[in-house]
Image (cartoon, rainbow, N blue to C red; front, side, top):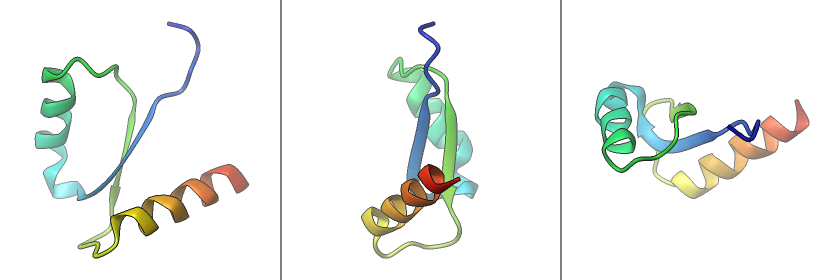
Length: 58
């Protein structure tokens, strides 16, 4: 543990949480916070960019 906060941002809705968490674990990704989209997202890159901008501002 190097003290980094790991954040995963996905365009998938939170109803796919179990699938996403399982996939990350099976592929040996380190544990971290996972943020899902609210509902269906037609432009996931834009949604992730907005999320990151808001995260930096807070």
